[in-house]
Length: 265
Image 1 (tube, helix red, strand yellow):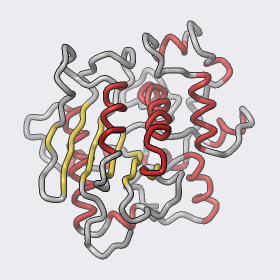
Image 2: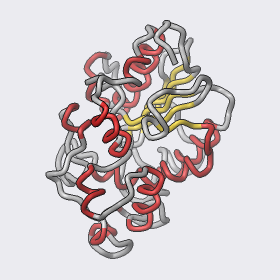
Image 3: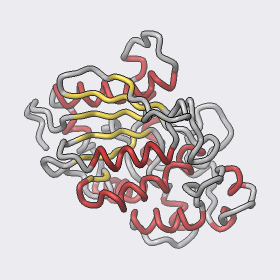
Image 4: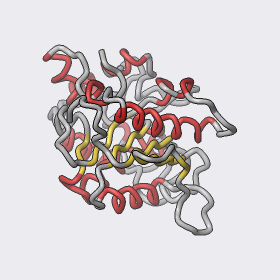
């Protein structure tokens, strides 16, 4: 993609994620906003059912169907997509993102029915003891963004639970949609023309730039993600955020740890 000012995407989806309860639970904190080139973000509600709010499973299934459509779509999700290099070193893991996702899901099967993140943390299922991190470990992008460690549970502003709940669903989407979707930056920093993209975002970067207009904090975070991505694509600045100013070693590291879209240095 280029910085010519011509929009690269047709749709922009902002997701405020939640790691609460189980994959089939209706979660008030799980919110989705969608914008198009022509329209401001609006909230997308789950398909009609007894559940009032999105479930993690339902959201993943909806994204799979949406991303199979022939409309380039940029999806921003507010949880970490990978772990710090210390984690890979501690468990002697191959520095390969698909391998990481498989290994994580094997030990943290948070996509299984009736499985809470805390069930695995407490040793009731899965094997957290063999794959746990240290809250002092941070990714380079976390340091640049001023974000908390992906292993810092049970504190305000933590993304640890949503990350541990969300990673297996990234794997699910990748398995179902395949090469139709570019997971940035793991599939490369450059975005092939016409492809949909899923990227990690950090709503705090932009939420204060948009008026709340009666939205809850969860709604506003999802709205802000979609609104910023749409605006950045329209004004031509999005291309620079897909190509952050990183040294070659930092870039290599970020393709293992992941990178937050919007952090340019």
